[in-house]
Amino acid sequence: MTVFAAFSNDEILADLKANVTAGSVITDPATLKKQSFSPNLTDDDSGLALAFIEAHSTADVQGVLKTARKYHVPVVTQNRFTSTVIGADGIAGSFILSTAGMNQIKEISKADSLAVVEPGVINGDLDQAARKQGMFYAPDPGSKPISGIGGNVATNAGGMSTVKYGATKDNVLGLKVVLADGRELKLGGRTLKQAFGYDLTQLFVGSEGTLGIITEITVKLMPIPLGTPVMGMAFFENMTALAEAVAEIRISGVYPTMLEAMDHPTIQAIDQYDGTDYSKESGAMLIFKIDNGTKQAMDVLNALLTKHGARDITVTEKPEEQAQLEKVRRDMLPAIFTGQNHIMEDMAMPLSQLAPMMDYIKQVGQDLGLKIYTAGHAGDGNVHPSIVWPIEEKGVPAKVSQALSLMFKKTLALGGTISGEHAVGMLKNQWNNAELGEDVDMLQHQIKALLDPMNLLNPKRKIN
Image (cartoon, rainbow, N blue to C red; front, side, top):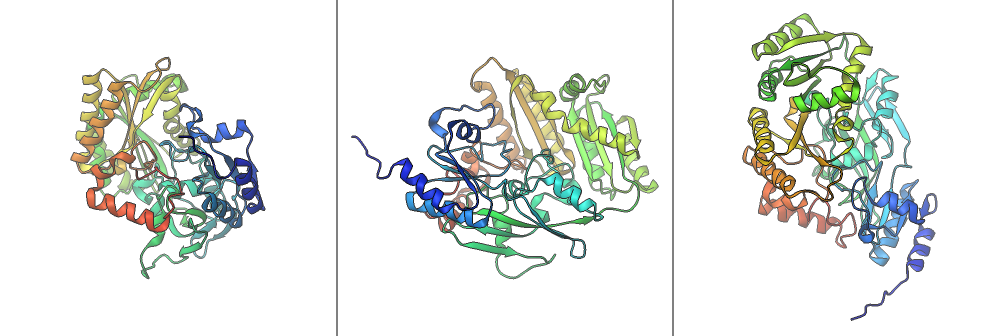
């Protein structure tokens, strides 16, 4: 049976342009293709958007939703488009609504220890602006130099400092959010405590654009700690020994800011990428940081590292050497991914189960004949195993899918989560029932139906 469209694309776009007054509506094929598909993903016409909208105001966001409701067009919100889980790719015939152009730091209040920003503000830019006033913004995902605060909030991004300062959700005080029906909600506020009503602020943190569109964020700022920060590295026989050391350090009272782990294959890749020689005699590498390296803290740290067989322990107070150590950790991804097909995963474990999970990941790689690079934010139990295969091989090999399934099931069996900080997107949305249980899975769909009854906002993402 032939189905005729009730309205032409030209009619829909004309209505859209009339409703977007400050921003831009872009429809040229090159832009649509670029914004519809993440790098390394199939870019066929099945996910090509109808329009890409650069919003410059809340009114623009509301205008896009007005047209979307009228013509039943899906709306995918993008910020800086750094998602790793196909959470912001285009949907066929959709509107891609970019909030990257809403990028003003509206306020930095040292007195109230907060900042008010638009969603397109780059994480690192906010941090630098805050530091000029003696404060800093704590969340630091690996994408800190390129990702926007709005995207960080939408995915509840983590990062290297989560071990001490928490993930994005722990640093959000308030939001402004536009619902699918066009209402703008003001949630939370400027106070460090707030117990009135249901906590709708945290409902939208991590909602991945499926419940509303974030237009303003109020975040905590922290004072720059007194004293001298210390960074260092230590080497272990294997990741299991490293994980056991981290578990003790985490509860020692030292309060590290960073506890980053990399296995031997990862260190080898970094050596090749950066021209270093860290892998020469090491099975695993730990990079650590303490905000204030007092003698007592360093004595406790050294004792625990030595107890678990760490060797070649080095520490530095020099800012340039600390920057180099941070670069080593941030270079992990390009070092591993360049020239290879890859999937990086994002499980988080109870700290007591991190060492068993490290053993299991290694065993899966051996059993299936796969090359797996394992690294992660060991201090908060977040592990990132990355599976690679030849660039010439099209599609995802069956044994890679098998490995992911095995690792996810093991994670859940150990009391962990299969998404620590990268969100769900489309890559994991079929696992909701397995992780959350049938009743919670159903409740999530009911919340979605209440706030987005026409299912216009990022459909099929986060929950399937």
